[in-house]
Length: 292
Ligand code: NAD
Image (cartoon, rainbow, N blue to C red; front, side, top):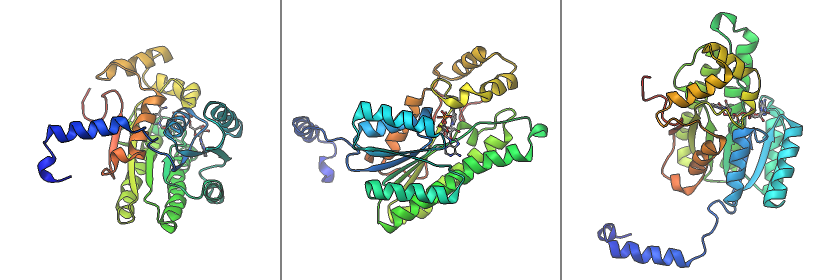
């Protein structure tokens, strides 16, 4: 675009008219995405969002039953050609390598990684056992590392200008009561993403982070012990906790898996082509810019 046309309204009107006459291609058509934690809330919502934009998606999860249910539901909804699933544990090096191999055999490579599989388990510091601490580090920071490393290798070998998106957490930036193991692991994910952005840039590989605040509805994490642990950390009932999250946000809204999926889609698409090493908080206006 010549510089003098940048502020020429007639030019933009003509361009817009041209665009409107063309059928709109799906923005991720021909791209392959790997989504870890694809049998759960945010992973499922993200996979659906990416498939809707034309991507082929490989769902990875440790939950074989949930994965089969998700895959079958997606096949019924979107058709069968662009979906595959693979049961694996993100903490197991061999299983991660096998998952990426499956992706290459099924879809020919990988353009987008959404590293999202996770747990939430916490305790006050003096009750945090080494096992609990280690479990958080293993699944979150180490799991993210293993999946990213294997994906990065494929992108580098195949010369793919890929796109890596981490689902970290508001807790990667600000500490939460009684959650030191989780907060530390989530912070490590953010630093890993920045390192990947640095090393990936010369290869055209981008890496960005989406930080959810509490996503209660649709998340398996919240149906388990975590909900009670959090409620007890705040000395509240579970219902009061959800209301607390809503009220403390500037927009007075709870965050849903679809909201996180939308932010991930932004980083997965060319709309964010000039963004790498960045963090997008999807928290209805809570962390980390305000002291409330
Ligand atoms: P979820 O429990 O609904 O989904 C997580 C999925 O990860 C599950 O399907 C689970 O089976 C899978 N998983 C767990 N351990 C695994 C392993 N070792 N290997 C492979 N898969 C494994 O939870 P969600 O809310 O969708 O969480 C997704 C991500 O978002 C997590 O990283 C979580 O820390 C992060 N997050 C969630 C919230 C929230 O409030 N829900 C807030 C901030 C960040």
